[in-house]
Amino acid sequence: MRRYMKAIFIKKNEHVRLNRSESERKFTVFCNKSISFAFVAHILLIPIFFLLGNPYVLTSDLIAVVLDLICLRLIKKDFIRMSSLIWVLEITVLSSICVFVFGWGQGHYYYLFSLIPVVFFSRWPQFLRIIISAFLFSVTLYLYYYTHMYSPITVLTPFMATFMYVFNVTANFIGLAYASYYYRQYSERLEQKLQKLANTDDLTGIRNRRCFERTAKSQLEHYRGHETQCALIYFDLDHFKRINDTYGHAAGDRALKAVSDACRQLLRKEDLFARIGGEEFAVLLVNTTHTEAAQVAERLRKCIASCSLVLEDGTQLYLSASVGLAAPQTDDDKLSQLMAHSDLALYQAKRGGRNQVVSLI
Image: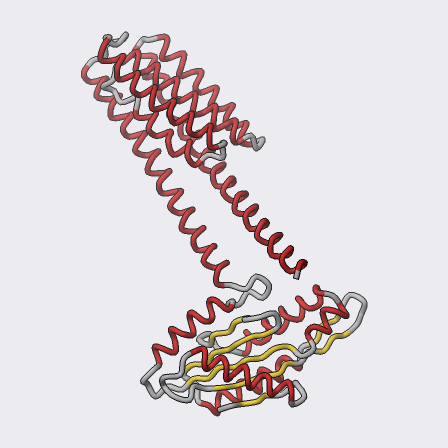
C-alpha cells in the first residue's frame, strides 16, 4: 500500500513538473515573438524620431533596439526570467521618456498597460509580479500628473501628433490581440489535455473507471424505453498477482497493455471499453443482442488467450482471462445493478476454473 501511494505521489509530481515545463515553454515562445515585434517596431521608429529632432527620444529608441537584441539573446540561452524583466523595464523607461517629451496625447502610456499580460503570465516570483504591477500603475499616474502640470518638451505638428497616436494604438492593439489569442489557444489545449488525463487510464490509454461510469450511465439513460438491447462484460486477467510477484510489476504492466491493445482492435468504436481496476476491464455493448454479446465475450476470451509476452530473460508468458456477461433485466435497472450482475458472473467464471465465459443473460 505504501509503495502504491508513493507511486501515485511520484506520478502527480511528474504531471505538475511537466505542466510547469510546458507553461514555461509557452511563455518563452510568447516573449520571443513579443520582443521580436518590439524590435521591428523600434527599428521603424528610428527615422520617425530622427525627423522629430529630439535627441533624447532617438537615443532611447536606439538603446531599446540594443536591449531587444540582448533580450532575444538571453531567451536563446534560456534566461527567460531575466530577459522578460529587462524588456518590461526597457518598455517602461522608453514609454515614460516619450510621454515626458511629447506629452500625454500621443498614447505612449498605452505600452504600460500592454505589459500587464507579460507580468502576470511570467514565471517570476509572486512578490515580484505584485511589485512590478504596482510600479507600472504608479508610473502611469505620475505621467498623467506630470503632463497635466508641465508642457511637453517637444511640440508636435497636428499631423505628426495624429500619426504617433494611431501608430501607438495600432501597436498596442496588435500586441494585446496576440497575447489574448495566444493564451486562449494555450488554455484550450491545456484544458483538453487535462480532460484527457482525467478520463484516461495512464497505463493502457483507454477509459478509466470514472469516465466509463459517467458515459455508461448516459448511454443507458439514452436507450431506456427503446427496444435496443445492451450488455455489460467484465473480465480480468487470471493469476495476475502471480505475474507481478514472480516476474515484477513491469511484466504486469506489459501484460495489461498487450491485453488492452488486443481488445481495442477487436471491439467497435461505439463500444465503451475501460480499465476499472488493477487487472479488471469492462465493456459496455450497446445496440447489441444478447446472442451477439455472448459471441463478443467469447471472442474477447480467445483474443486474450492468444496473447503472450516474451520477457527479457526469454521466458514466454501466456495470458488468459475470466469473463462475466450480464444484461439489464428490466428498463429500470441501473448501472450499479448491471455492474453487480457482471461482477457476479465474473466471480463464477473464476470459481469454475478461469479462462471461460459465464453469462447471466
